[in-house]
Length: 254
Image 1: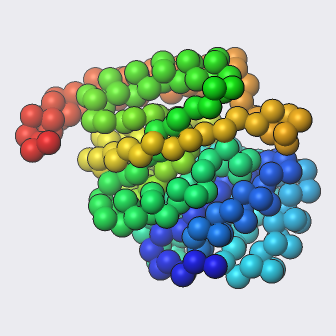
Image 2 (image 1 turned 45 degrees about the horizontal axis):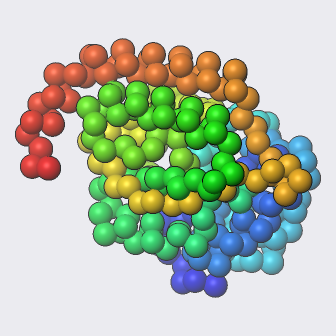
């Protein structure tokens, strides 16, 4: 098992993740400790399996929320406990095996080298990735870059990334949004507004079919409606912040 980090941990929000969750957690533990899983009201039996695994592996902690609150809420619960425990950064990754655990050390190293930044995964899709998902995210990416005056967000939706805890927790506690599927894109935009610069690292993403154990909670109409409302809010916030963003951009040495 890797040496225990005192500052950076892997945080995995999990809701009815399907059969790949244990392999995902084991793969993360092979690369980094500690690993925390926040079970977001799962009803598929994965809670008990994760707790059994935690009893065998001291680098794993399982936090159980009593009801499903959404990805952002699960991340916020983990952030709060992590900051209380003295951690400064979390790497978030999905529980269903889509994200590359083998890249955890590289992302953590990039964060440790520049702790004031957020380290964002920029997805590299396999040839069999769903075209609707791949092309649809281009819209969100375009809006996110406009709303930040092109500060350098490589991908607004890819959830494999390292966040500095303090500014993200402060932002989330100050507003009622970012609690569900809107968490990932809104987090990077609002962190950019707060002056947290992005660092992008290419990383593969894998979409598993149902017969491969893949589970997707993405609902095209519901989640795209949520994203549309989110970008409407963010664009209005962008207009209010535009003079400050322009000044920051002009005064930045980069």
